[in-house]
Image 1 (cartoon, rainbow, N blue to C red):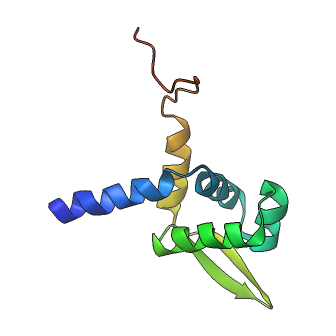
Image 2: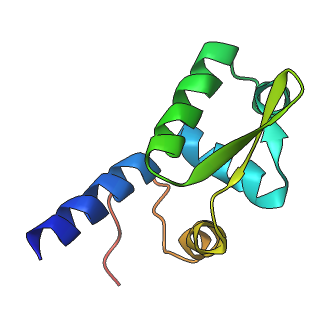
Length: 102
């Protein structure tokens, strides 16, 4: 059971990065190449490529070569459900990062 929780914790560390979450949201809408992601997100190529490599290693995205470009997409429908369900979680955007007690 320990391995299960360690792998889940690794997954949440991957998801705990704003840039990677933005990339996943874009890929949930449609497959994109690095150049598309750079333009939409206003990130530099090395940064986008680094984040895609992390997402690929985690099994969240896959890349398919199209000529000289690689078009990335979500690896499975489960990843799409994960990205969508994340939006339903309560998030505290206050500067302190602390939730107010009801």
